[in-house]
Image 1 (cartoon, one colour):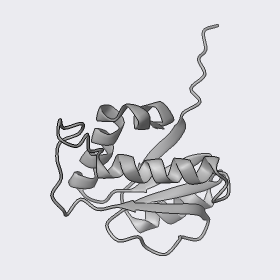
Image 2 (cartoon, helix red, strand yellow; image 1 turned 90 degrees about the vertical axis):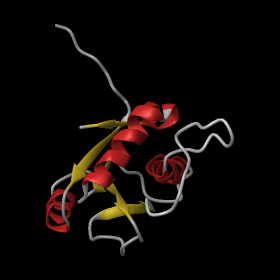
Image 3 (cartoon, one colour; image 1 turned 90 degrees about the horizontal axis):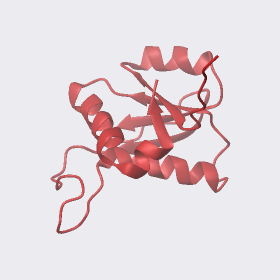
Image 4 (cartoon, helix red, strand yellow; image 1 turned 180 degrees about the vertical axis):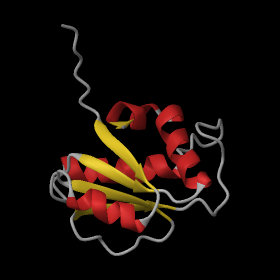
Length: 123
């Protein structure tokens, strides 16, 4: 029987705060990723990070600065907090992404940033 092991952290997208609350109530320890200003830590979450898409930025890996997508940088902060025990251990990340722009930013982070794609996977 074929099987595979994918040790990357699962990343699930939720579209609104109601779905976020429901997913937090029914699952393992979870970190939350949100677009814009960080909301208060939702009940049931163990960590929180946010990213801002409103400012100007260069393309992923541009020649002048090697910039990383904002969502990738936020996921990096969550991962670093997890491995350095700066927050409780979490087994998944819920991304509150209500807009098409936010979902595109997450997709870009996982497809264009090698470090992010090595640590996280869409579920």
